[in-house]
Amino acid sequence: MIIERSINDSQHYCHFNLTKERFVARLGGDDLALFMNKQSMDEYPDACPFLRPCPEGFYCTIYSFRPSHCRNFVCV
Image (tube, rainbow, N blue to C red; front, top):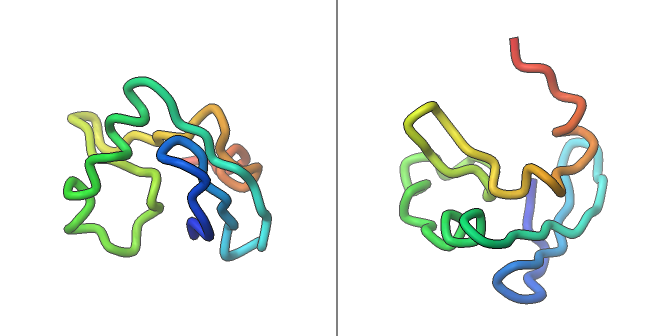
């Protein structure tokens, strides 16, 4: 996933590089605060720009607005 352009801190034009799907990612509240902490992902430079580490693994900061490819992904 690539952030093409930021509208502001909480809205970003994005596209999913595998399917070329375009969407607007929206963040708010605690998700926005997590997203703004970019240092937490320094050791994962190729990861989705909206993921952040948490005690349980990783947390999606755009979960409510994630693209269909992410919605359809099944982790086994």
